Length: 274
Image (cartoon, rainbow, N blue to C red; front, side):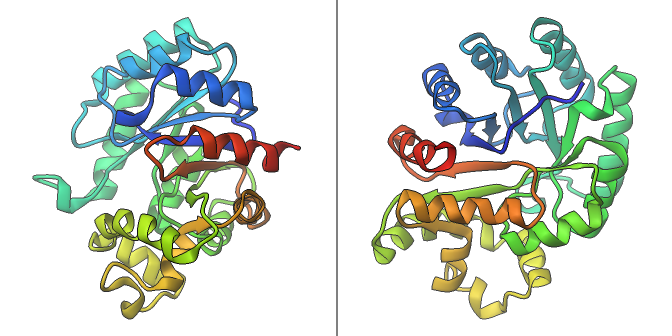
C-alpha cells in the first residue's frame, strides 16, 4: 500500500534531520518527511523518525543505488513496513556520475536494482524513483509508484506529468528561503545550487527546460536562482509551491535552506494550511 503523502512535506538532508523536527512537521500539518542526501541502506534514521511520530509517512530522497546494495535495502524495507505499515515510501535513484566511481549505464542499473528489490519483496507501489529525463520518468511510471524529481521548476513538473500520465505519483522537491530581500536570498541559495549546476544530469535537464548555458554558468543567473530557490514572504513561497500542484504535481517536498528550518516551516504551514 503506497503511503499517502498529502500535498506538502518537509525535505531535509539526513544529517540535518532529527526526531524533534519530524514531530514538529507532523504537528504543523505537513504530509510527509523526506530524508535526503543518500541515507545508509540500513535506514535506521527512517525508523527513528517513524518512532518519534504518530501518523506522518517518511520517504527517502534518495537511497543511492550505487552505494547501497538492493538486498540490504529490501531487508530494511521489510523491517520498517512490518513495524509501521503504510508509513514508509522507499525513494531510490542512481545519483550523479561525478560523485560515483564506476558509474555507467544508469538505465540498466535502475532496471537491475528494481528487479532485485522486487525479488526482495518490495512492492512496486512502495517505491518512488528519482527521475528527471524522459527515460527515467518512463521507468518510474512503469515500474514504481512514481517519480521524485530534484532541482526542478513547475515547467519541468508539467513536462513530467505529461510523460508519467495521470496515475503515477509526481513529487518534486523545491528549495525555499524565507527572505524578502532578493540579494540576501540569492546569497543563501546560489552557493547551494553551485554544487549541482556542474553535474551533467542536472545541466541536461535544465537545458531541456529551455535554460541557457549563460544561466547555468558562474553559479547561476539571478533568473535561474530565483526559479530553483523560491524566496519572499510566506505567502510568496506558498504561491510558488502551489505552482507545482497547478502544473501536475501530487505532492511537493519543501527544502528550507536554513541551519534551523523550523521557524520557516512554521510560517509556511500557516500560509499553506490555513
